[in-house]
Image (cartoon, rainbow, N blue to C red; front, side):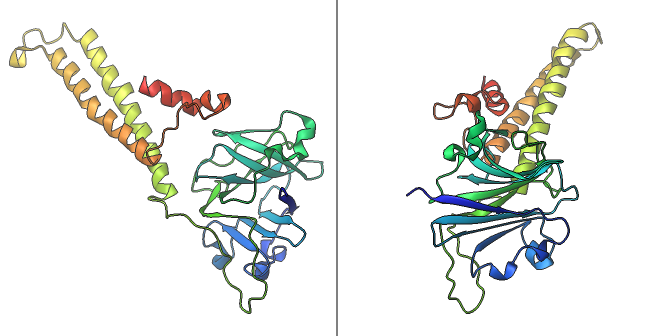
Length: 299
């Protein structure tokens, strides 16, 4: 029988602890808190719990703190890796002047795509097969309705930046309720990632900086030197070559190792996986900005 999902969704206006029963974590349900370690500090911005009920439903709860309780959403994604892209999403949207609504959607690359038909909002086409392991992704952001959720925070230092649970979990697992003492809810884990998300983030940034510097500064300067400096310093020719040629050659040679280092950094950040177009991806994924960027960079 296909697993069924029941989402219990609440909007936290003031105190999270006043609504979320943390005492049940590890006893009656599994809990994930964001950011990491926030449960000890009592400053969690997002909380997510799940448990397989006796009737076959998977009970899930999503909580978040938001200074603006309207025109906002909280979403949970079920991903097979620790990056956004190719995962089903369930979001709870709090529109201004309307009732909270729940909808399914799908992440296509770095964009979120809603169902194409109105009646698909409650169908299982966009729901994940729950009896397997996932990385849980939690995100919040602005939203006008269930079909138009906005972009979440892009700065890892902000509270609106998505939280990605480092371990894979199976939401079809149950908690041993006979335990005398609260214990951490079991999870199905994979190997620890070789680097943190923060490290990957900075590797991507350095990659971009080096590429911009090499192509837009060094190489363009080399071209301009060859074009406009030919008539300068006519009486000076170190090593038998004009100054313009020394400048042109030096800048081009310098750009080569910088480009190679930049390329190496992005492959390290992506854990040596190809993110460009491939036969196993949908047309929307193959024509996304990231895929086109990867293809053009190789060309």
